[in-house]
Image 1 (tube, rainbow, N blue to C red):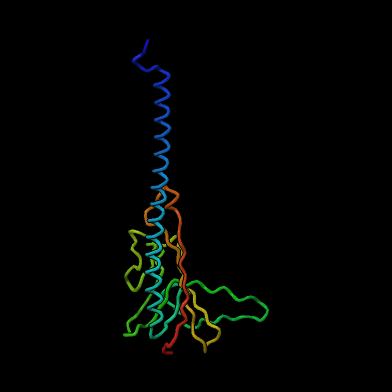
Image 2: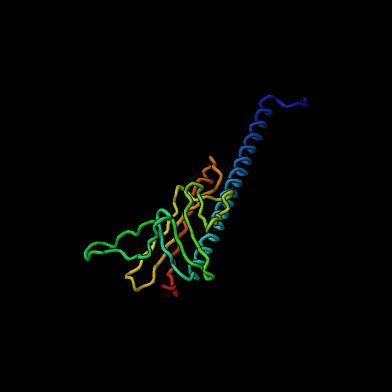
Amino acid sequence: MGSRGYTLVEVLVAVIVVIAIGVIIVSILSSTLRVTRKTNVVSSIRTSGNQAITQMAKLMKFAKKFEGVSTNDITYVLDCTHDVVAPTPTPTPVPYKYLKFKGEDDSEIKFWCDDTNDTIILNTVSLLDIDTVKVANDKCSFTCSQDRLSTNQVITVYFQLRQAEDSTFAESQFSIPFETSVVLKNLVK
């Protein structure tokens, strides 16, 4: 005699197979979405960081006059030499929060690390789209160095960016460092 229905065991096996296939498909889709999200976050951070550092380097390169670095926006230091005693290692440059120049048109160019809003400011405008990226944990500074007073200053810009929105996903919780050094040339002294 032929049976026209399914046994309970056959139905359970079919349900288990469907559930297993569903779990595999969901994990593949989840993994793909996470990789896509990470790629988008990295791309956004890199784009913002590269734009900011390029703009800063360009303005410094074509500046008319170096007006100093400062930790407090009150006292600016023009002398970037460091006193070195012969056998000691090279001192670590002081990290400053403010950097000031005169532009080609004699306008003031001031960069500063705004730790309150997690951004980098050019005069009064943020160089970053703070809806997308922010400076990570107060990691923004400028250093100034030169061998002796007769040589040109070397300004190093350093900052680290992270995604602006706080996320619990691991692929969104990282930061990317950016750094460049500019040798100041042809400045009016």
